[in-house]
Each structure stands twice: as structure tokens, then as C-alpha cells.
Amino acid sequence: MIFHTMRASAARARKHVFAASLLALLVLLAASCMAPSRTASTPAARAEPEIPYESMAASIAIGDPEKALAEYDASLKEQAQSRQTRILHARLLLIAGKYEEAKGELDILLAEDGKDTDVLYNLSIVAGMQNQIPAQKEYLRRVIEVNPAHADALAALGDLALSENDAAKALEYFRKALESDPANFLALRGQGAIFTQNKEYQKAVDVLSKAIEAQPDYAFSYIDRARAESALEDSRSAIADYSKAIEMDPQYSWSYIDRGRLYIRAGKLDQAYEDFSVAIRLDPEIFLPYAMRGEILYQQGKYDQAFPDYQSLLSLKPDYYFAYEHFGVLLYMKKDWAGAQKEFLGAYKYSPEDHSLALLAAIALRREGKAKQAADYLQGVLKSIPRESLYYEVARFLMDPASGEFALTVRLNEEKNKALRARMLFFLAEQSIIDGRSRAARDFLFEIENSGAPSSPEIVLARWELDALVGRE
Image (cartoon, rainbow, N blue to C red; front, side, top):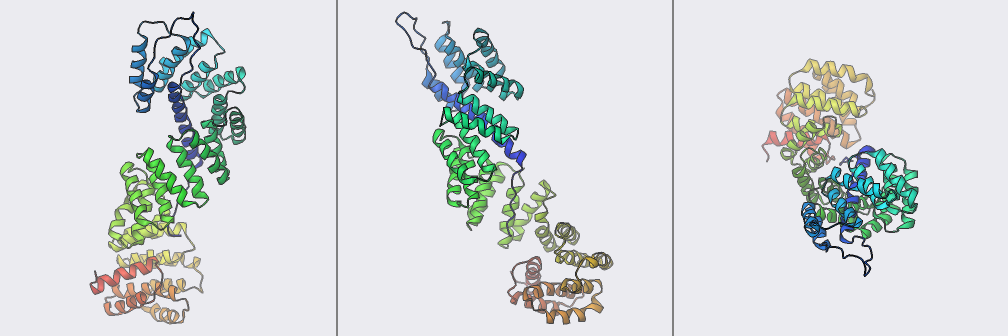
């Protein structure tokens, strides 16, 4: 497998769902300002002050809740406020991030009516935004006590259960929420998360499509649906959803990373390269786009360009062992023999069945002039290499080239696996270079090139050595 992908940990995925759900609540709050509930007026009732709801909603939509608050205050001035306008004011404070002020306003309203579900629900949001989970649960419990069919409270309880990894309880809350409100955004997204977690990807796509229909301006719904579509190998739909999410939120780097992976799957390496480059510009501290872009460059033979990406990758994530082998090759090309040996040894630790990595570590030591260390190292690993294998014969050769070359040559001539023979010829070529026999080295390297063997560390390095020996560009 050329391109290695990494799945997000369960903890990271859970954090994403919870954070996205809190943001979804704020989206819903903003929507509530667009269509606030109004008490019916009677001929005897004093007229409510005119509040510029549309202008306030527009201010919230462009991310300026302070302006919405100012418009609200200007519209009321010294006039007495109804209960509904006071709730609206608390919501505006909440959207503006003024949690303590919002709570103070809501506490006064709750003292006047302890069973007001609107107030209780908004208090639960304040508690949630302040990470006061027990208080958030208590407010939601009180909402359900008064109104067991309160869809938003049920959905919020489901989200909390999901954040605690109780998917069964969460699913039940979401089911009840959707019975009351089939278009409840938070419940639909929660169901989508559970279906994805359970690998019920088609169900996830279906329910997330409903969430998008309910709230089409929320980028993470498209991202979540794209992940389910990707699992169904529907790359075209997933790329379209990631593209929509990027259009809506161009600063979220993971959309580019995930879309780039899909471009790789589709063989569109130029588009993938560009997506990983954008992700790196947006967040240079994420290791994965360096890994993906570096491997694209490596597979394209652009080794000098790939080198800094592998450097950055292993600086950010030193235990990313998938990269050790290729980085060892790149260091070898730079004649950093000690660095190459270290990387090959690291790769061999994680792939102990791939004995060619031990041989590459040994030849790097010999290129560095440390023949005794190479022999001592191979003596230590020889017992783990099958005696009947060609790797064993090459290891014996590298321990003592003078006495082992004839036996290795005979064995190579008998080898029926042409690709393996070409790879092992590389070690004869390298030892010939060390011994100053450049003509013999060229013969071996030309034979490797003409073998048509598929790419491997030995074949890549053989081509590099041949280019250096014959002066090819």
C-alpha cells in the first residue's frame, strides 16, 4: 500500500462532534432571533416597542452580535421590556459570548417563573458553553419534566450522552426528539454520528442529508456526510461535499486533508498535492499533510522536493514509522549515511519481517566506512533471517565481502524471482563502489535498471547511483 492513512482517534472524533453540536446550538439561537416568538397583542394591551429583528439577525449572521445588542438596546431605550424581549436579550448576550450577563438575566426570569422551559433551555446552553456539565444536565432535566416532548432539550441530552460514549442512550434521546420535531438539526446530526460510528454508513448519509436540508448553512454536516460517503467508496459525492464545506469554511484545514485523500484514491495527484499544500499553509502544525504531500513527491521521483516534507513530518511526529523507510532513502541520497542507517533501523523495528531493511542499514554503515559495525550488526540479526532466503546470503556477503561475493553471485544467478534478484544486486553494486570498482558497479546498476523491477528502496537507490556514475540528469 503506497499511501498510508490514519483514522482519527475516538477521543478526537468525540471532541469534534461535541464542539460542533455546541456551535449548532448557537446557530439555532441565531435563527430564533430571526423569528422570535411574540405574544399576541390585544386592543387593551400596550404596544410593544418596535425591535429591528431583521437587522439584528443580519448582524448575527455576519458575526457581529455586539451590533445586534446595540440595535436591541437602542430600540428599547427606557421602555419597559416584556418577558419575551428579556429572553431575546439574554440570547443575544449568549451569542455575544457574555455568558455571565446572560445567566444573570435568565436567573431573574427563572425566579419569576421556575417552569419556563425557554429560560431553562437557554440556561442549559450557558452551562454547556461554560463546561458546567452537571448544571447543564439539571436544566435539561427540568425542561423535560415540564415538557417531555421538548425536542431541543431531548436532542441536547442525546448529545451529552454521546459525549459520554453512551450511544444507546443518545440514540433513544435523538429518537424521541425527532418524534417531536422530525427536522431537529442536533438530533439528526447526532444520529448521523452514531450511524457512522457503528459503520452504518448509508443510514448516516440518509440522516445527515436531512440535517443538511434542515440547516444547509452548517459546514460540518457536509463534512460528516462526506466521511460516510467516503466509507461507502462514493468518492465523487464525498469530494463534492468536502468542496461545499470548503466553500463555506475555507479556513478549516481538515477538509482539505480529507478531500486530498480522496483525490489520491481517484488518481488526481495534482489536486491532492494542492489540497495538502493549502492545509499546510492553514495549519503547519498538523503532521498528516506533510506525510501525504511528501509521499506524492516521492512516488513522482521528486526527491529533493520531498525531503523537507519528510523532515517536517518527523519533526512533528517522530513516531510516524510509515515514513522511516522513505526518509532513509532520501538521507542516503544526501550521503547522510548515519541518518539513513538510523531510519532503516527504525523501519526494521516496526517491520521485522522485511529483512531488506536490515541490509540497507548495514550498507549505510559500510558506506560510512564502518565495516566492523556493519558486520557486528548483521551478526546480531542473522539468526532472525531464514537461512534459505536470499537475504541471508546477502547478509553474509555484507559481513565479509571478500569471501562472500562468489557465493552470492552464484545464488543470484540461480534466483528465479527477477524483482528480488534486481533488488539484491544493489548491494553488490554498492560494495563495488566502496571497493572503487566503478565499472563493475555500473554493470550491476544497468542490469537493475533493465530488469523492469517495481519500485522499492533498492531500485530507487540503484537509479540514483547510476545517474551519479554516468552523469545523467
